[in-house]
Length: 389
Ligand code: ADP
View (tube, rainbow, N blue to C red):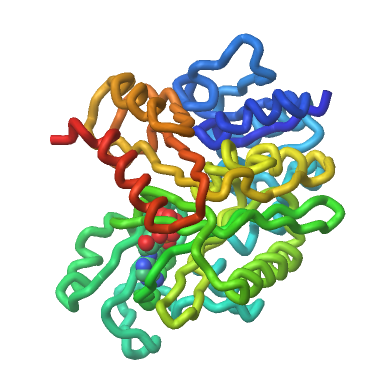
């Protein structure tokens, strides 16, 4: 049996387990806590073993390498320097560390995308000395932590000069980390946010999934609808950009690419995530091959699977925590399952916290009408947030 090591044990690793089971693959998951979503409620039949260790514990990763043919990543919090010694010993990481290298720091990622001629917002390093006009920027701007940001943690939209001058008072970092911790970029007045999942195989084949629209108010994804309502030429432009990007990166595995779309039809790349991604969760129920299965196929050298939607459309709503509580929200989950063509995925996290992703629900639709899909997202949110005070 093929054995795959996975560094990280959150819900993204957890959602990979059924795909591993289907493909006859054993997963060995390295994660710090027994309560982490992927390993907390393991079925005894699940083809999974667990190494409890911090993500950056190289000796634990070496243990994974002893038992697995290939090691992959659940998230982008990867210590490349620490792992490079294992590569020298012949350990196979997919995606490769060289693929990840330009992507893990948001500033370096922007530089890399720009070097490929891909459209990105105007950006610059951000330090206490930065004067916006000197780097070609003006308010409003977005300041971002270069590393370890997720779900909008580490992304700050700054609209006023006062907020900009206050920014550094909140930063609790010593020098020299402080000077290399942030970037600043133009605020993009987008009309819609888009995302696309794409996978590249070991032989260089690239497949893309239907482009989706994401709704991310306050920098957290609330819902995703597929397919995004887009002209054929825009779809081709995006597919072409994504194929170029994955080919240049010599990527192996699945990648999520987030984009901004202006009313004029102009697009910018916001971010590339070198892993399975929240915007691809609806592939679990709506596409022939889920993003999780596709990732395993790609990294194990199996043929890639078909990516098209099976229903005419689909909507995915994140079940975000809205309070700090220990609960399983069984009433709301039950109500959600009563919605026609709904599938609820619950991650089994030990505690709800505001903004924490506790699960998601996908509803398959028999048409691709955007306004009906948005309406469905709102109905699902109304059920989930019913008891919110
Ligand atoms: P994270 O990596 O935490 O998801 P992102 O950089 O993707 O952070 O930003 C989260 C959200 O913040 C985006 O989905 C978008 O809604 C908003 N955002 C980020 N960058 C910009 C920008 N340059 N202009 C306008 N909105 C932005």
